[in-house]
Amino acid sequence: MAFNFKHRISFMEEIPNPGPDPGTSLQEVKKAWADIKTMKGSEFNTATMAGNLGVSRFIIKYTPGITSRMHIRFKGKDYSIRSIMNDDEQNRTITIIGEAIL
Image (cartoon, rainbow, N blue to C red):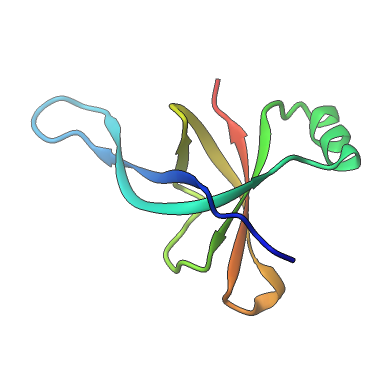
């Protein structure tokens, strides 16, 4: 299967705000080229039945250090990471399922 890694995505991580102000902010920790796939009909139906709207699949080249606590930023929209899969456990590609943060 050929992938077309033509979309630039950023991995964002929440960090505590410096100084006396409480709270956190998102900071970019990694960038990657991704192939973004639409969900198949059955996958989309399952996701919407579960109440998950705006679900996307991001496929990137294998990169260690990606965690489910990170967010993905693509075209100004943030996605929370729901699933990270090392495709066929071959350390070639990773498939990430992300849900749009409204």
